[in-house]
Length: 247
Length: 140
Image (cartoon, each protein chain N blue to C red):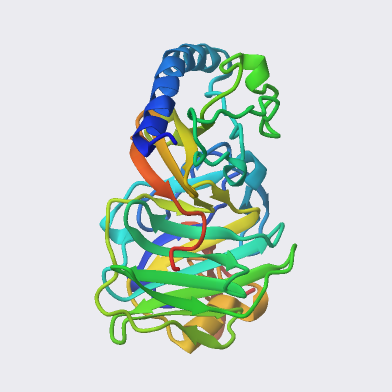
């Protein structure tokens, strides 16, 4: 299975580390570990980042152009809430608010907010997270109509209002699971960004029936030599080729 | 009623008086543990006293027993703070690709609005001047 819009993938935080900084396997934007973020069993990969709100744990990166919404931008996150309290999954905000995602009871579910000046495009899914359940969130900003959108678990797409102009950009840091003194409780990973839009088929492929999709994805093309078929499998994480393995 | 400037000055003065001690003790803690000491916020931001009455800048009793679940010592154990404070304070620690550091953030409430500022040590500049704290999503 080809990885959706792989050429436009800008960041891929697998969150497979047990602790410490979290590597970006595509964009090189290694996340800073704040207040000792641990790990737990993951869904897509063996490990996911485990964040404890009471310990004020979060991950972050200084501002970078690739972390701003300056055109078509898509976010993908797998997240498992430990508690369903209001808290951010990720955001980029400071003196200037750019964007934020999470769960907010005042919105009635999960959301992506994108701002232009003081105007807001707020895409809201009605899903309220159940503790201990993995959720697949795909959220994007489409510059064609200037709307934020969200789809959870490959389901219906919800859109926010059209912005009057381009989204805000600033020097604010990018943070996963913290918004000022609000912290998120649960497991997260992987988290990814594209500088393009994904279509419904792409979202379905990433959701993969609830199992998620590793990057690089596995593929099983076959070679036919003298009438005999030999399969090969490209192993995830650049592990190379194993000939004769058609599993 | 204290003015916002008076409230900020009171907090700035207190933070300045603590900052040298924080840096000394953090250096010692890092030498022993290989990481900096984390301080959980001493008063939750939704429980900050509101500086709207007459008189002096309000002080609060910090909860110095707080500590993260993966750290053995609290504020009491490290002795960084004692007595009442005009603000809440927390110290976040980090491990960045470029090294270790910490950020101290203070919070205070004035006429229903919460303000914060930060000071930091380490390769990541976590310092921030006074700004309004809004815990809700970025929208209204």
